[in-house]
Image (cartoon, rainbow, N blue to C red; front, side):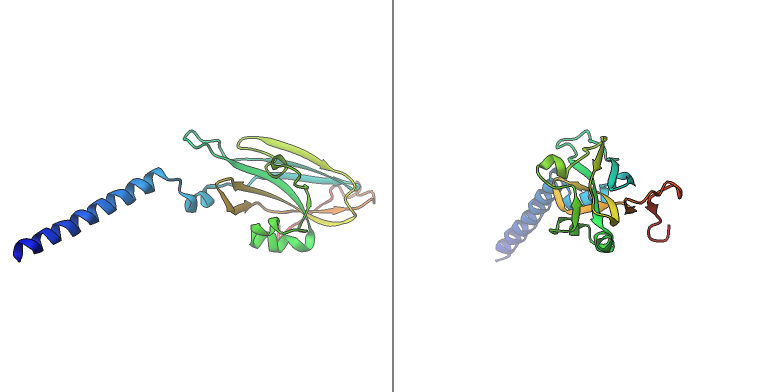
Amino acid sequence: MRETTRKSVKRVVGGAAITAATAAAVAMTMPATASAATTVKPPVVEASSSGTTIKMTVTNPNSAGTLLPPSLVGCNAFVVNAADVPAVVSDPTKLLKQGVVVYPTFSSPATLFGALPGQTATNSVANIPEGLYGVIGGCVDLFDLQHPVVGTPKMLLVTSLDLSAIGSSELPAFGS
């Protein structure tokens, strides 16, 4: 009976060691999707309006990486109605909700990912209806679409009035 107990203990210990080694190997070879969300940096966005046109420049500060798979973090600048800005800042996945994003229209994957790692993209959007808008830059890892990261919004007044006398159409946002 003692011999059977020893064999059983050896099997349990051996099985636990194999399980631990397997888990460690899997953890080291698989991409860390949970930590990927924390390593994505928000984009640098510049935005201005002139008349009913908004000009936006988005720069993706994320690096392409040197390991395989390469970093596939795409960034873009999004125009949203001012009323939607607080919801998007608190939950960036709101950008995926229909009707929140005024621009860009997502006609292809390239319009979703305007700037890949290290790139800068500039877009102008003409004929925006007059009103108050937020321009929010967002980045997301293609392998972790549920965790986009957004930067500080830029609030813009879009109007056909001549605002050149005040110098800028950008409004201070959130206590800045």
